[in-house]
Image (cartoon, rainbow, N blue to C red; front, top):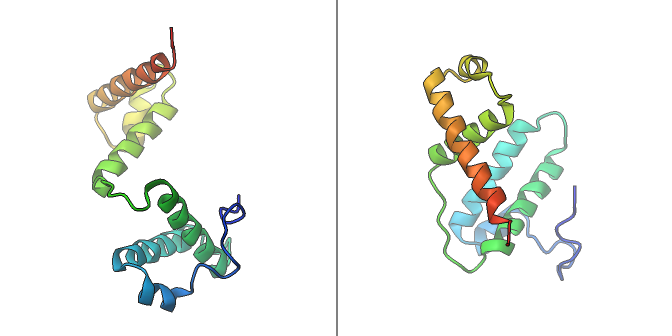
Amino acid sequence: MADLFQDQDLPAGALPEHQALLDKWPSRLVEILDHLEHQLGTELRGTVTPDLVSRIAKEAVLAIASVAGGRPIYLPAASHLKRALRDDRLWEGFKGNNYDELSRATGLTESQVRRIINTQQKLQVAKRQRSLNL
């Protein structure tokens, strides 16, 4: 894992422990950090230490802050993000003719899978063509 702190002017221990976060950071940021720690702890249970889970969560918050810090950002509802991730996984699993297989794996109808694949294909084409600076 890349250490997001190595290029920063942050002294050791600059990211405060949890109680200091509660005292100094905005409550929404603390809520996001707590949620990240919980989700990572659940996903990585038994594979990493709780201290590493906490560090990864803090690094994730720092990475988000490095992109959007000080600016208002819009985050879509979780249901929209989950749908987008599902659609991306469908596209990754698409082999050209396995609509039925993807339908059974996801619980979607074959026509829903076809519609999603068609949309993903258009997005991929648009992404590739955008890079053609003629």
